[in-house]
Length: 259
Image 1 (cartoon, rainbow, N blue to C red):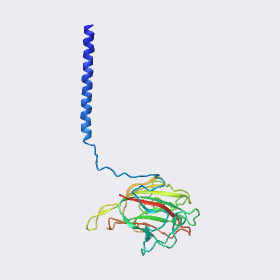
Image 2 (cartoon, rainbow, N blue to C red):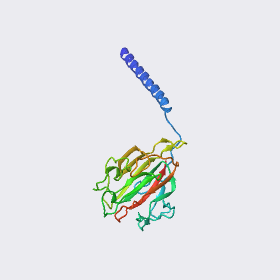
Image 3 (tube, one colour):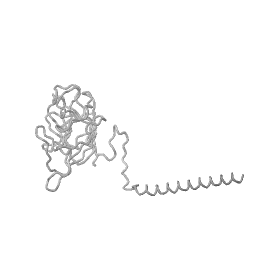
Image 4 (cartoon, rainbow, N blue to C red):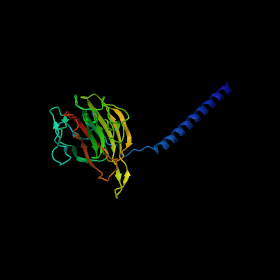
């Protein structure tokens, strides 16, 4: 019996030692782990409410459906000549020209909704052609690409004449479509040489179509893209292409977050 008690006592002692060692090891690991924990700066709280309807609380709303006071004509800086209807939808007025934002932006997150007319006369590049120009020069193509063959680096979701979209996520004409974009602005040395290029990631209707691609330079429809030094922030431009068959497309709910 005495031997039994000694064995039990020894077992308890071993278990106690093992548990003590485990705790010591855990305490040591927690001290090491604490060295990799960052407690500041604390991220700003951003309210998202309904992310499919409302802009984040820190976003700049560029098109709310009330007016076009955040925009002007690109050509002469006069009032934007596009039409805002009673439903809050902005439609291109053919021949009125491109519009650009009053405010200039660099790196940003952009949400934009657009709709091709339900009936379009034309094909290829004449079906609801428009474009979104970051910093006034790097174009994300807007086009009716639903059952509409065209050159693939010029279809909807393409970085025009530079990058083909990963997939064609286009909806039918007449349905609202969305772009959610992360754009990283290029940087230049003081002498005008390119330091770092621009990058862009695009989700079209919730589907990834451009995955952090490196923009090759200014958008041009017939020249090889090339970078030219410019300011750190430039306006956002929406295009009146003039090739819409008389049925211009529409925009709504545009907001942007500076990064």
